Amino acid sequence: MADTARCSAGKPGAALSVDAARLRAIAVARPVEQETLALVSAVGRVLAAPVFANSPLPPFDNSAMDGYAVSLADLSGEGPWDVPVTLRIAAGDSRGLTLAQGEAAQVFTGAPVPKGADAVVMQENVTRLGDRITFFLRPQSGQNIRRRGEDVQIRGRALAVGVELTPPRLALLAGCGVTDVAVHRRVRIAMFSTGDELVEPGGDLAPGQIYNSNRIMLGALMDRRWADVTDLGILRDNPARVRAAIREAAQSHDVVISSGGVSAGEEDHILDALRAENARLDILKVAIRPGKPLTVGRVADALFFGLPGNPYAAAITFSQIVRPALRRVAGLCEDPDIWIPAVSGFSYTRSAGRREFVPVTWSQRDQIGRPVLERLGRGASASLYPIAQAQGIAVLPPEIANILPGMPLRVEPI
Ligand code: AMP
Ligand code: MG
Image 1 (cartoon, rainbow, N blue to C red):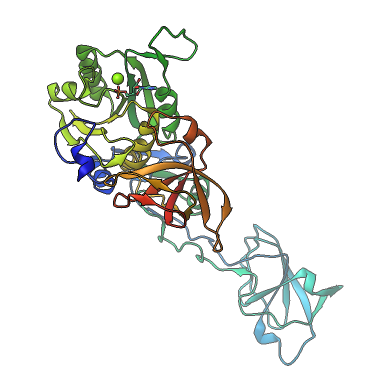
Image 2: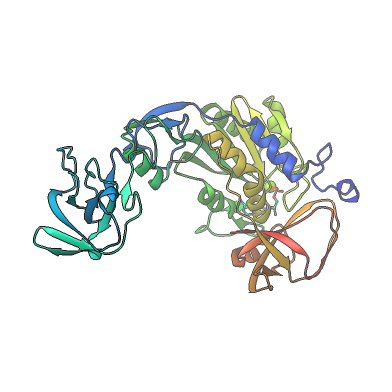
């Protein structure tokens, strides 16, 4: 392909498609070990084993309303029916009562429904006079009764392996009487930026220097619910320093992420350092724009991601390839499928061969509600302003060189 021949990354070998690269990165990512945690400490963590209910949810048949429990068999003919109220049952009542034939029980929300009752008439639909109620509408069988185990049966699977423990999921487990869960331990991630030109914001820029954008961006992209991040700051373009930093970080972390220095230029030292450390290199080049020189490999037992230095390229390769692999390391099985169908509102002629990610915004929709995309910027991999303004990133298929207004496109919201 013409584009591959003009490869700017200068690394050997053909470029992998974005999907192939993502799958390969996921395949080499191994989930971290597990540990047992109390529910209260487990928010945001990832289940390492399915969880089964210790208790059915709900644990007994109970009323969903304040009202009157009745037996449908008692309601012969047409209403209205006039029934004596002989029991009063509040939430927490432990008497295990039975409803006598032809009678009703006053029940409150969450109260056990007495044996023999098969519907609850809400109190708004009855007229009560002394110890009798009158009502007109025949209740449906089971109306306003929450059945034992209707949410989760006893020993039923409450949650599957590989899901993140969100607040509602923790509530579900608590409701099933679960106290402890097997979760993956936190992922230890080290990250650094490389480049002699980099200065942290707040410092003075000498000629030729730029502020470090990737450090704050990559740090902000980390999912702290299941990751502990060691920020190693800026590494200068010194082969020995780069090599030592990679080796040391790999010894004490599950994942090492760097930015910059992954192309084949003389001041790009990441690849040499990886080779010197006997890294297994799994991905060297991806048919992606921006972000072609992405490198993925394994150093000792750690997974290594060498992101491009250009910030927009670093952002795109992170979202397309690094994040899915990191989620695998964390033990996550769910893959958030977040793209939405859209339609191009712009013309753009480009060289085919790479899947391209374009910052877009939209203010209009077509007849069936798809966003009509406006392109931002000119696709420069160093540009931050367009992605900072964008509502989403449009995905241009590698095989299409001429993008025209009206073409259907995927967009990934930011
Ligand atoms: P490199 O991949 O090291 O050749 O860097 C490619 C381009 O990205 C160069 O223009 C770098 O100055 C720029 N760059 C590298 N790292 C960063 C960073 N952390 N923040 C902003 N720009 C960067
Ligand atoms: Mg550099």
